Length: 246
Image (cartoon, rainbow, N blue to C red; front, side, top):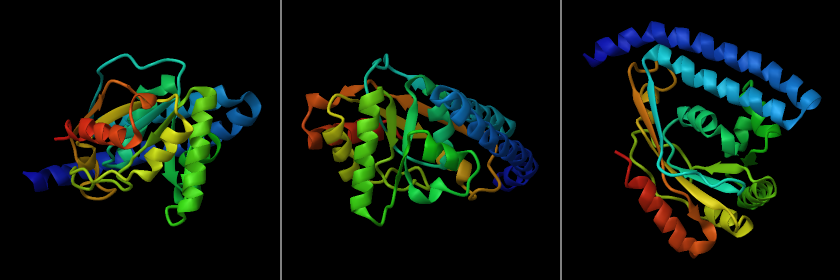
């Protein structure tokens, strides 16, 4: 049965990647036009629409999304989104479903070039690019990200596992990046997210994408950074997130 499902997924994966490629090419051009001519908000609309279309086109593969927000998200405050990480397909739903809080990302530097739409947004849209082999550079970049969201009351996504879980089993949280964010965005709220089943979309690598995967995103109630000691807060966040990972 699994072999048959994999075989069936090939033509649908081809169709999806044709659509996905069109998104990357078209919205790369639209971003490069919108940002210099019309500014941040026009550029953000392009990013939102690109990721919304990625979510929509994943339905070609029978993929479904449940994005549940358990409590109201605080407004007009900086937000640190902390999530487990299972695949690259974690990112479009976060951008689309949480677009009102302007998610930016802490991402490895290699993604800042060579990928249409994605690289331009990471470089120009307020995200943070870090060199994972250079802790000093990474800390300085994360500090700037914390200052950015504090200034504009936007949100920054960090995947503290460091790398994605290829089988859905969460990895231990790395603490240095979180502590840097807490220190330089003390007025922020943490928004924990538990992601399930996204890893299944990359079960075979990038191709083919398995059919009929059911992704769930559970957004937990926000936690005020200043209410806890940093280490205690990290323990709490890790427990909350991992407690809802199947």
